Length: 74
Image (cartoon, rainbow, N blue to C red; front, top):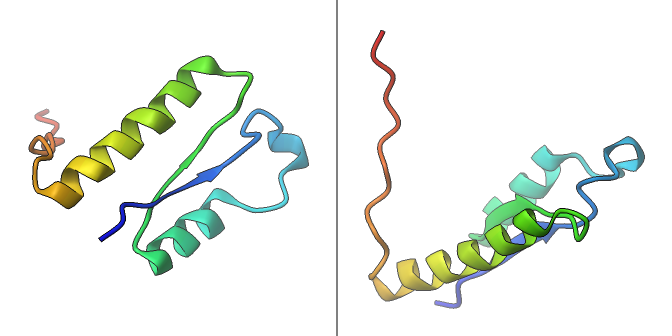
């Protein structure tokens, strides 16, 4: 298995968007890939892309850390 991440670029140009995030997610799902959006202007986002790639590689090797459960108690 080759871990794959589909990255939508130019996230910061949302007013000029051609493809909706939902479409990117749907395509990534059909490939069995992760999906995220990024922007070169937002360095933090670029770092997150590489972190996600590493996570997907660890998942493929069976070494991924357990996912955090998201729970809200009110």
